[in-house]
Picture 1 (cartoon, rainbow, N blue to C red):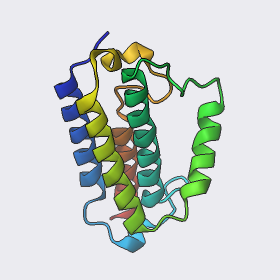
Picture 2 (picture 1 turned 60 degrees about the horizontal axis):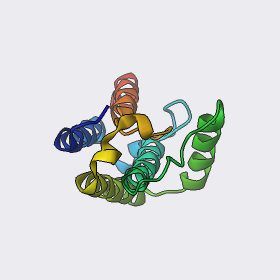
Picture 3 (picture 1 turned 60 degrees about the vertical axis):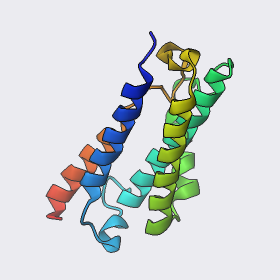
Length: 150
């Protein structure tokens, strides 16, 4: 089923605004506190950026008429997330923010340039066309803030 491009762009803007609200007012020290099930807020931001980067590439790939490169078998998603975490866990607050901003721009540009084929959500693998991933992580960050009194 094809999605509406303008609605998708608005969806991702809203997801990012929700994530920004979840981290608003946190100090750099708090952003680096790795007590959200072993991850810091910076780790969460880098994780979201990773998947948005992949999603943008998928939009372009599928728009060009090619198959998804991100169809994973059971367990591969967790293994990829662990590898991605290990590779990006040294990010500073500044880099995590930059990565998030860059990947948001890249995703929105890809969606804005997408053809009708790329708006068919059934063509996507693990980095699906429509995602609530940022909101999910924002919810975990909010819960953590409440528990910590931040």
